Amino acid sequence: MILSNSKAPEKIKKVLIRPVRMRGELYFQACEYRGKQVFHENYTREDLLSKLPDWFEDCFRQAQIWASGGQAVILVSKKGRVTVREKKILVGQEGEATEKTMPKEHNREKNYIFAEGHPIPFLVDLGVMTPEGKIVHARYDKFRQINRFLEFIEDILPELPRDREVNIIDFGCGKSYLTFAMYYYLHELKHYPLRVVGLDLKEDVIVHCAALAERYGYEGLKFLQGDIASYTGADAVDMVVTLHACDTATDAALKKAVDWGARVILSVPCCQHELNQTLENEMLVPVLRYGLLKERIAALITDGLRADLLEQKGYKVQVLEFIDMEHTPKNILLRAVKREQILPRSLKEKRKAAYERCIDELNVEPALYRAFRDWQETE
Image (cartoon, rainbow, N blue to C red; front, side):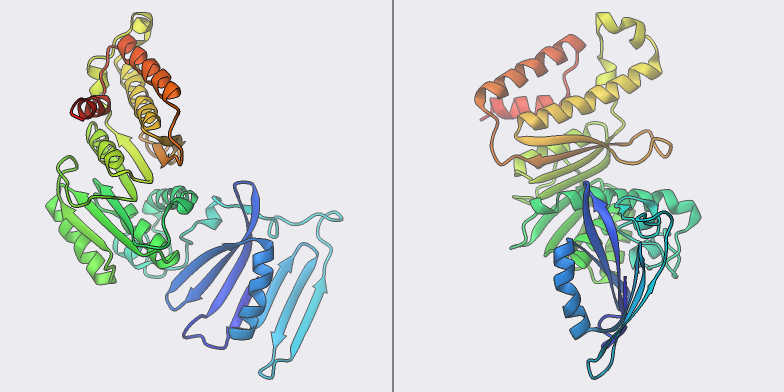
């Protein structure tokens, strides 16, 4: 459905509505075109039916509708007279809808959260989009990665507070494609009161990103030069993001997140070298003698042990594929959400014992384990 012929085009130009499936449920995504921005909202069928009369009364004089059984046009005159024109058509077999009108999976290419054809200033400046909103061919993988990352955030929106400012730290933000995307999505599209801090060691990167944030008027987005382990700029944080922080820098970020009691942790680890140096196991000798295989096994074990430790610290953890393997081998994302109820003491002790048996058998002592152990010894 397209709602158009706006009564106040300077406020809202049109609304595009299409069916989508999210987590197996049918929703209707409404894209509101306001000035140079596009705002997205997902509605149930009932909520959409309640919203449509308001749009017609306040905003629009025309609607075009496509459905499996035909098409319709709704016209509203200046005096409020409503005219409906229908055109019934036969589509495929009886009772069968065409692909055009079937609900599309929420993560299909043509249904990205950031849609192609609608220029977003920071994506233009970062070289992902042209000023017309077309995706630069050489940057299409980055465009897909950004949208995939936003899907992970969309899933955890119920965990973020609505009644106060949301505090987010992005460790190792780099060129900050995803930092800007996160801020734009949460603040500009979802209207969360927001404070985001991007932290990185490279001064030139921080200066560039800070200048962009100022140009866009993103008052809640700040960039600071600094080290993950020594950062002391916050007492409590709602969400911690760490993407491709190298080796044990990821562990430092995870430790900080747990200390802050962060509701959500999103981590894409990188360069997991630490365990590769000591990993040994008599039964795995035939495999571990091959350097490449040992490196990959060590990386997977590193992330698995991180996930288990976060579980022990009161989080529900998912190990997810970030983007397709063809784009990068570093494609594992750890998404941790703080549990409402702590694990029973007996279960915590059982998991701790299993964890310690595992690291003993593999002859490893992960940085995150050492950090929590040292922290407990000083309590």
